[in-house]
Length: 349
Figure 1: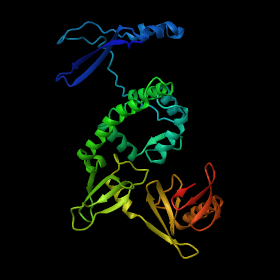
Figure 2: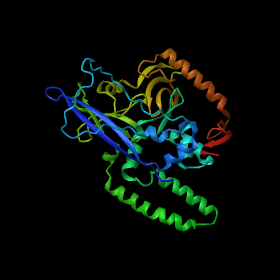
Figure 3: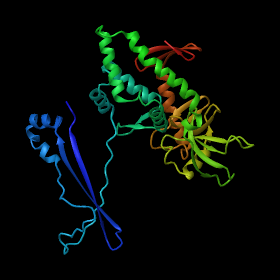
Figure 4: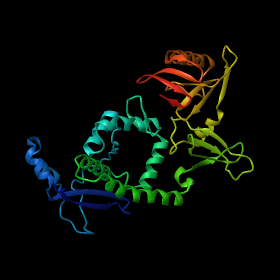
């Protein structure tokens, strides 16, 4: 169905002795109803859809003097704030993918798991999917340099091609060649032309009062980080992880400098191993020897004390003991999300 065509008009009205006030009136008129005609005919409750779309402005000319309709009535001021669209939940994101013709039931769950596993989004306490700093940088990069690939229409068309291939109506080799050859050429070209600095989008925050060196934030190998100094300095720059509670785009100089107060040595465990608190790629944690234990949401590595750290460690060790079925040294049998599995080094079976 053809899209509707709507003509929109804006009138700017200047007022005041020095024309220091600007008022705006907006109107619109349906030129061609398109899909709206069908919508109004098939929805009894929305039978007035077309007429409601029309907001007719009075006829005026440029430079015309306008009179205030009721000069006895004072002009009232009201400030309105537009609410941003709500964040997606996992369920509403699946619904959006379905409506756009992207993916299929077998790919929805893996897609949502992947963007969380890679740290592109995180689940809030309200079960909303919130983009992380890494997710925003990756999205901006793809939108700037791989516009066609991240276009919803392109992705939906690929899905339709897969359906035609499954029915035998299209050759998969030809389809993949048409896609991959220009895509590969673009990857090679971007690898040469796009600098690392452009991708990382370093943001300068100010100057460290102690050293007088610049303080900046950017994306590093292990996620968002704070940097004091530059690689051109005689001394190596100092780095600290930016906690997930802070965002690259709005973190302040003071907040960034607080990151260098970590790691904090809290004390020793009963076996003499050191206990410390720090911020990492996936949030704040307590470290005991080579083991890491996540600090619950709402608590910070900057102010956690030894007693609380011991509680977190004990809880973590208890969970770990239930996870290990058998330990044969280099090989372990573990309880996983989908049942028992074998782990040897970095390999999982």
